[in-house]
Image (cartoon, rainbow, N blue to C red; front, side):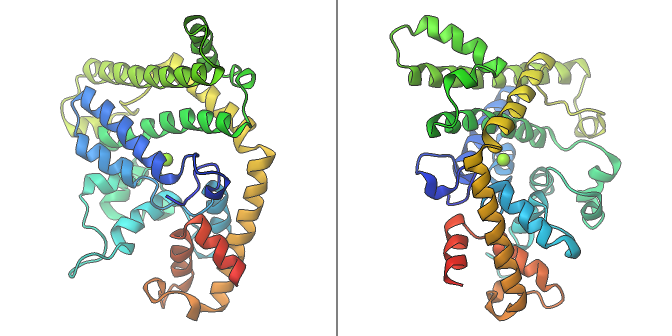
Length: 320
Ligand code: MG
């Protein structure tokens, strides 16, 4: 709850966090999975866990920690999500981690470097052989993109960084917005924007469901092996809408993620993460026992830092 999606938690209570983002991804995933007759519980599990490995301060935090870990195998948030459920969560007498199924773990590990994939046995094979994961994992992948593009537009608008005039540069947004302006003549601009975003999400979910259903029937897919061996992912948006979503993502990067107010936060995040890493490396006794790894202290420090919330990291940095 207290980890950044785009806006640092203390900037305001109404912005998305990792938790609300994950809940939205789970809801969208469940909806698509239900329409396609897939395993809804699996899709939900993957969605809820997909961002567990994120550091505090969003991507800025992950880049900083990856730099700190450069000589020790690097830091990848997808790989860390798997590490959380496989190793770091301790809830059982007899084993580390949560004892999740292969299919859940496969879905959680969305991307993985070849180097890390080689250490993972069966789970890493798909990154080496370039095969596809389950349809449920593919659903979550697309749902993640749908969720963050829409909610980042909304949060950007709410924050005042993005205005309606600016958002009309996003083709998918503009088309629906001009329709909504005609329908909702007397409505406030805010309501027209929210109505537009809601319908935009509906359009994306509808489109991915239809295109994926078409892919599955036209290729006559009935076995999981056929899903895995398929050259391309079977769950995807249709080409036209996909191009629209890519344009939206690139626009958001330029207008929101690279905005001065967000970038300033990134610089601070970098300082805090780097300081915490260096400080704990030279004072390993400060690392809580659960995170101490004798033969690999750097990994333990990275585990400790990546599990922090924004405010914990800020407070610890201040007190040290
Ligand atoms: Mg995500």
